[in-house]
Structure formats: C-alpha cells, structure tokens
Image 1 (tube, rainbow, N blue to C red):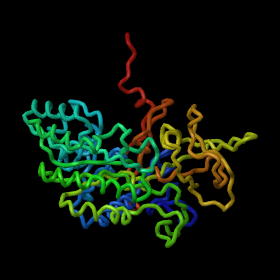
Image 2: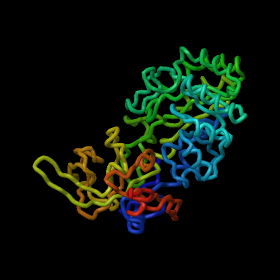
Image 3: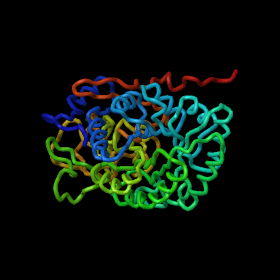
Length: 430
C-alpha cells in the first residue's frame, strides 16, 4: 500500500498537498509517508506472528535518520552493511544488539567498531572473513558473535544485479560446504557461533523461491542447531513491491482485487510459504525487509523544465536526474510518474528525462503519460527505496532534501545541499 492519492484533483501524501511541499522546499525533493511505513511494518509483522521473529530493517534501502528512528520506535532491529550504517542506527536511537552486520568486504576497522558497540551478529561471507573477525575480536579481548551466510543456490527470478542466492554470485558459502566452514568457525577461539543466515535476492515477486530456499536449508539448520546450539536463523529479505500500481483516488490496489491477473506476492503469501518449514526449527527467525517497508512510501518530486519535440520523440525534461534516482539507468527500473495536478485521460507518448549529460539519464521511455508543460510538477512514485541512498553529486548537482510526512504535518529530515557544500573539504595545493 501507499498513502499517495488525489484529493480534489491534487496529489497528496497522507494529509499534505505535495504542491505545498514543492513550493516550500523546491524541487527535486524526496517525500516519505510515515503511515505507509507503519502499515507495511505492521502487516509483515502480523503475518509472521506464528514465528518467534525479529524484523531487521535493511538500512541500505533508505538510511535517513528520521526513517530509522520511526522504525526503531516500531520495534525494528536493523540489517547493516557498513560502520556508517551502524553509526546512523545509533544516532537514530537504535541499538547495536539488535543489528546484524552483513556484507562481503568488512574491514578490520568496521569489525572493531561493531564489536565495541555490541553488535548482535556478523553475517560471515567467507573463510577469510572468519579469520579476520577472530583476529580482531582477540585483539580486543572479546568474543565475536557470528552467523555464516549459506548460499542455497536458488534462482530468485529477479534482476541479475540483485540476485544473490545463486552459486555464481559473490555472496555467502555454498550449501555443500557450509558444515565444513562451521567446523572451521568452531575451532577459532574468539568466535561465538550464534546463528545461520541466508539471503537469495531482492525485489522477488513470488513466494516459490522463498519456499525453495527454506526447504533446502531446513535440514542443515537442524543439524547446526544440534551441533552448535545456535540461537537464530536469519532468512534475509527480498519481498518485492509494486512499481506499476495505477494511482486513482479511492480505487483498491491490485492485490486487494479478487482474481486480479497481476497478482504478486503479499506478506500473507510470503508467510504461508515459509512458516510451515521454519516454525518446526524451534529457533528465532530474523528477517531483513528493506524495499518492502519503504519503497512505496517515497516519491521524488520534480518540475518540468522543457518539452522538446523531435521527428522521433517527445522529450519531457525535468529537473530531477539519474544522480538523484539511478534505478531506471542502472536496472531499467520502472516508476509510475504522475502530475501533481490530476489531468484528463488524454495521453502523450514521451520520454521523461533529466538534465545530466548521459543518454542513460531517463525516468521513462516511450511512456503514454498525461501531457506535460514547462513548470508542471510531477511525482516519481515508489522511490522510497534505493533512491536518495544511491544518489551522487555527479555533474556537481547538490543532494536533495528529504521530507517526512506524518498525517497533516511534515518534517524536513534532510536539508538540500548548497553549492558551498559541494566543495566542502576540498582544497587547492599551494
């Protein structure tokens, strides 16, 4: 679900007119809905209620402090992949002992920082990492809690850049070698084996790959529980979201329409596929949702600068660019684009593009959209995940503001960078 809808012809986020936000903070700008995050967290948490479980939000999806603080208050743990993300969680009021530390390239400095802060567990990706964590923990006089990431060789049926559970991917230890690597871990004196972890990919739109991964790993997890008295099984994240939902005031989302031909995975589908396999394990089950919680909670507001007609195309040029939202350029990711003022049903086929000097700087290609004119404002929907967090200063463009809406109130969660900010920390040699 999301909380963006037209009311009296004006696009709103919860109770706030997005045109008002655009006027006050300028464009481009990111806007997030608190209600959407609350609803998505609650729905997933309820679906998984038959399990002893903990949701650990994947910070990489959206790491704004206001978002992290909101999720911490909801009771979320956190899935982190860097010392910087752990630092953000702590600044936002989260706890290190509710954080799992993932990632294939943890440095000694990051491991030491996480150990000093009391991280719940390291998700270990290689034997070399086991050795390094053991050495760092020994130097600090500590025992490091670890869970080895086991790669079940499951096809997640998602984009090749965000598939992580196949044997050809860089992540984890193959299921055929997992028991051997756990024996190595057990022989290292400064490690405490705490759990097992897996993650097969992102933006997965059907339940079958999750069920297959659970089935393939269940026997291994039972054996490891008996051998090492493990506490948890971290099942990762990956639940996909809807990027092409039609935006009509009062209309139900497609997953709420009986017999919908476009049905995709719901929290209930996900839970039904995995609970029968995971519940008999008798372990705490950790989940790492990211995109599912925040993806449809965000919109990127932008203003049309020019409409350029050529013999081949109509180009609508907006002030947002690929450096602000790279998903279309990187993954050919699809985002619904709608005007802030509802228009007629008339459509014009166009490319919606940004001002960056790259042909890959586009948000939509050959898309039938409502006709747009210079100074019209639009919202690029479902941009709450992997939007701002993947942005850059390419073309020396300042980073955008982020605004969090809560009912009829809104909060500036990040200021827009100034031109002076662009060169802060740089210097010219004498």
